[in-house]
Amino acid sequence: MNFKEEIKIIGLRGIPLIKKGDKITDIIIEALNKNEISLEDRDIIIIAQSIISKSNGRIRNLNKINPSERAVEIYKHIAPSIRSLGLPEKDPKLIQAILDESKNIIRSEHVLITETKHGFICADAGIDKSNVGEKGIITLLPKNPDIDAEKIRITLKNKTNKEIAVIISDSFGRAFRIGAIGTAIGVSGIDPILDMRGKKDLFGYELQTTIIGQVDSLAAAAQLVMGESDEGIPIVLIRGYNFQFNEKSKIKSILRKKEIDLFRSPKDEKFLEILKNRRSYKFDFASKDVDKKVIEECIELARWAPSAHNGQFWRYIILQKGMLRERLVDKMNEKLRYDLLKDGNGEEVIKGKIEKTRNTFLKAPFLILLCLDQKELEKYEDTERTHNELFLGVQSISSSATYLLLAFETKKLAACWYCAPLFAKDIVKESLKLPKSYIPMVFFTVGYPLKAVKAPNRKDLKEIIYEPRILD
Image (cartoon, rainbow, N blue to C red; front, side, top):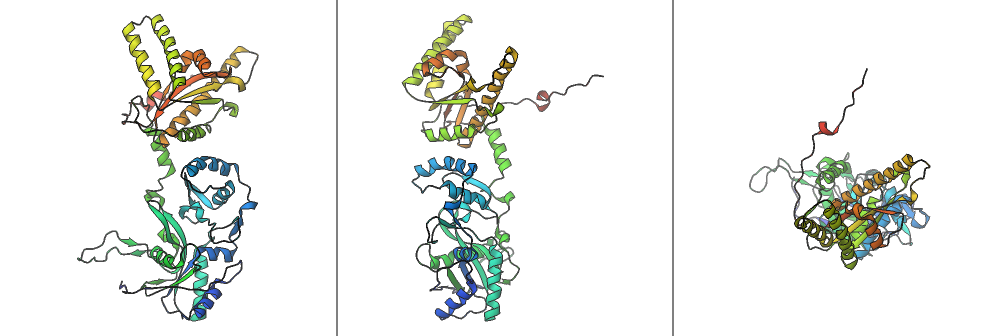
């Protein structure tokens, strides 16, 4: 392909505010006339998504949206991160609109990265609150930007007899860089990508992997003229770019397939990685501080664990470093000393175990106590059923504990599960002034790891699957 040495980027001034039902093609022709520009063959028209959406009526009033439970939960999850970074909060109503426009939620941290129903990976499903005018009104991406682009191209061709290309653009952020750039979301008449494989470079070497995202490059160039604030130039003409005309082009060809998308790894693979990477961490923790909000976020995830009768019997107590934790551990160690003496252990063994226990529970950045609240367990007249109900409660909080450990893994935190509270229940309850219905069950030590933990040997699958025999 022979590239021209000069490309012109011309903003069409005088575009009016767009309303539902406005004909974008008529507006383009009128603007061309006002700017004393005549279309030429191989011109490229770049149109901002916002005016396409407005003309199509793709707007919503946030005040008329009722957020779902999922939207509220996402809001609660991301709100702490948003506040800590000083970013504008996302109302649950806006989150609901984002959910309505999305196929999948890829990331939900201080920003929502979604896969739209078109297949675009972008922030907030491409929803825009700027340049709309009325408060509470948002614009949504066009339902089918390719069709919108094609209609405009064909109509302009019929009215001007010029063979042109049309690109509909929006502003997208990028995974590894700060700042939004113009990105093509719909095309007609031009291929989204320019495949340079097989061509020669300056030194005669054959290009093996070079593929240029030409419509994104053109959209980004046009955005330098369009701007993002009050410039008011939503339509740009690019002249002089030498491209191969293709009336069958579709934006889909520029979308990266999931199986080769390193940013968006398949959910099942990521989950398997989390399951296999989790280790019981029994070493010293790094000196890096752990934000209590991160601990609370992990507990928030742990409450989604399954439980008998949906009783959610788990109760968490977060113990930061301080006198309360020290007094608790010292009193528990008195009980440990008594138990070890009763078992016939010598003073040297007792001293070593107490010192190890004290260091483990006091040096961890956080010590988390998990209790079973038996108040909501069902009551029965016979002892066996009551005993079994208690087992159901234990199973339930065990599932929450597992969720918690996996949540820690997603936050790159190390943790270990200790059953010490079981052997000093009364001491724990008294020291922390816990309700009578609480049964202390588990300690978790939590912090950032100082070193990697070697994976322990696991039993062979045949050893843990029992095949019952059917007797004749």
